[in-house]
Amino acid sequence: MNNKKQNYLGPLIIIGVLFFVFGFVTWVNGTLIAFFKKAFNLDNTSSLLVTFAFFISYTVMAIPSSEILKKIGFKKGMAVGLGIMAIGTLTFVPAAKMASYVLFLVGLFVIGIGLTLLQTASNPYVTILGDRESAAQRISIMGIANKIAGILSQKLLGGLLLASSTVSVAVSSETELDKVTVPYLILTGVLIVLAILIMLSKGLPEVSEEQEGDTSEKSEKTSIWAFPNLVLGLVTLFSYVGLEVISGDTIISYGISLGFPESEAKDFGQFTLWSMLVGYVLGIVLIPKYVSQQTWLKLSSLLGVVITLVALFTTGYTSVLSIALLGLSNAIMWPAIWPLAINGLGKFTKLGSALLVMMIAGGAILPLVYGKLADTIGAQSAYGLLIPLYLYIAYYATWGHKKTNW
Image 1 (cartoon, rainbow, N blue to C red):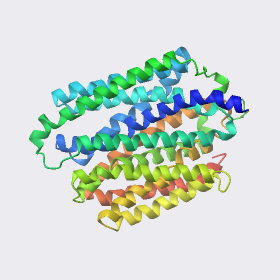
Image 2: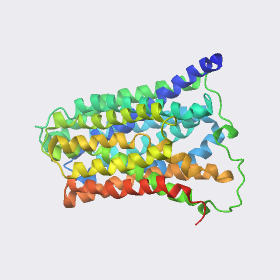
Image 3: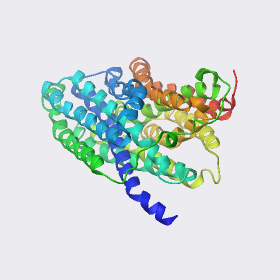
Image 4: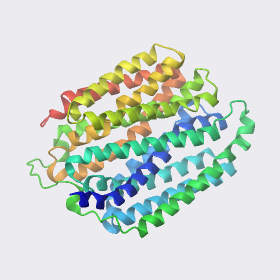
């Protein structure tokens, strides 16, 4: 048993590095939103096209990724995903030179496409590299690597891009955009090196169809839409991703709207990630020994409602820190929702999983709804959008996942 675990250490380190990459490129979006908002003089809705361009790629690529991996294998798929991401990060260089917001969005979309392929290929390894009983623990550890990377990306790029709040819009458009060139060139180089290392690695086994998921379970149902737990789960995952992106990626701009200087507000996104880290650690310790995943999901969503109400009816640091504390509510939602949604799908498991990945579109669409509300009724009041989302997740955790028939 010990030898087996030691044999898994190398591959798990590789997958951990990839989850670090996921976090670095995903959680920097909050910094980019505030940066582009200043540089291009954008309103809230336009600046949140950053999250739309990035996350809509998951919906576009979810099913194609599965087909690509069937043809080229999971290991090559990860390398190709890293290569596509490198093309996206490299696009930031001409985008900065041309001062083109549209080209930046194209670059983010390409990064998202590569990331979708990379995640689709790497996620199964977290399950197969060790006992299935401890898979949830490994998922939490990967989540910790993801959030630490996000903290570092916001610290590094936030310090570079949002270090000053005294620059005029005219100067920003011509000079400020050049700040992204060097870090994104470095990031491009790192992604290319990682792609080469993945291809040369001999420690990663190829994932077989049987290992991807249990599809042997029998079901009399003839349509995937005949499973209420999945259909309601799709809406739940859509809601969860949307509220996680809103709470994580708008907090810097929200802080600026409250009057905090950019040099201070740039660190607010890190507070959200730190609270998510606490949530992951609590999940590792408490689930399933002391509390079930669905109970945690219910309690987390109700906690999210309470924290959002505090954010809505307070001011200054209290309100900002309340938004950051939502990271604690959001931390374990993904691994809690997923098994409830695909439970009992049988031969529809793969299709159900692909549809769930497509629901990452919540991170593309719901932030735009928040942005429109923020432009109309104010950034603080717009957070009221989170309350019905959390309440729906609470419904799913309590009753929705139990429905087996319409």
